[in-house]
Amino acid sequence: MILHADLDAFYASVAQRDDPSLRGKPVVVSGSSRRAVVLTASYEARPYGIHSAMPLFMARERCPHILVVPPTFDKYRTASKAVFEIYRTHAERVQGLSLDEAFLDVGDIGLDAAVATARGLKDAVRAATSLAVSIGVASNKMVAKVACDDGKPDGLTAVAPGDERAYLADKPVGALWGVGPKTQTRLRERSIERCEQIAALSDEEAFALFGKWGLSLRDLARGIDDREVSSDDGDFTAGSISSESTFERDVTGVDAMIPIVREQAGELGERLRKRGLRAYTIGVKVKRGDFTVVGKQTSLAQPTDDPLVIAGAAVFCLRRAGVDDTPVRLVGVRVSTLVQTPVRQISLFT
Image (tube, rainbow, N blue to C red; front, top):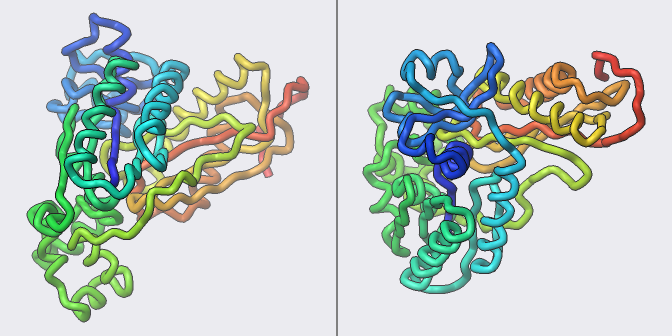
């Protein structure tokens, strides 16, 4: 059995936990620059149509009384570390997807035992961090992810082995990994809007629609997913500093991700300066909607802690990552090859 665990509105929930005046009110976590974007929106803000990756000015237009708080990444890392320590005591393997999200392999146990484990996790996380985590329980990763989303916020949704196809049948096709807005439009043109319609396709029909990928997509629509939980989640190596953001819904197009990357570059520049460090290498990590990871990096002629230089290099890498038409669920920026020697900085990278 596999669990998908996701801390609810993580950044905003941490802010509301630590400041009682924010509780029960629409809150977004965001920077303050002209190009600032929403990193996380509280559940009270979401009825206004506010979500992550939205420009802050648009969020203010939709909700003039929205409360904006700056990100506090040290707090997020501390809370995440405590939560993942709990996960590791309850699971055979843990695959971290971001600070607030993970898959857990809880072994060859029955559904009732897996649900009991999930309840124990929820209680332990709340006791340790005062945060709520939603959990999906299923026999494979994709169905567990869909079940987790169904239960938000603070939910626990379980799908019994053998019921995967029936559970997915009435879900919109966008629930399937790898099906982004463009693919949804293509399917709607053929009057395909629900998972069961993809599940019912013949080999010839699936191949005609999407080539070889069509057969894999049909398997997913049938609730078949043989991907294992792996502790190798594609995270950057040690000796670096990184910042990542998971989108509440998949984002398509590099231009939509650039504001997030710039926010992350600003945060990394601040963290470098506080530690008296500069970085020679800048990289980006992109996690696609199907959870595959691609990364690109570039080396600077001189080390830097300048957020504008970091942002420029990161955007350069993002454009080289080849994800223009790919649904993306996470983007991150990394700085590495860190030095403390004070040297003259320049704004060119190679």
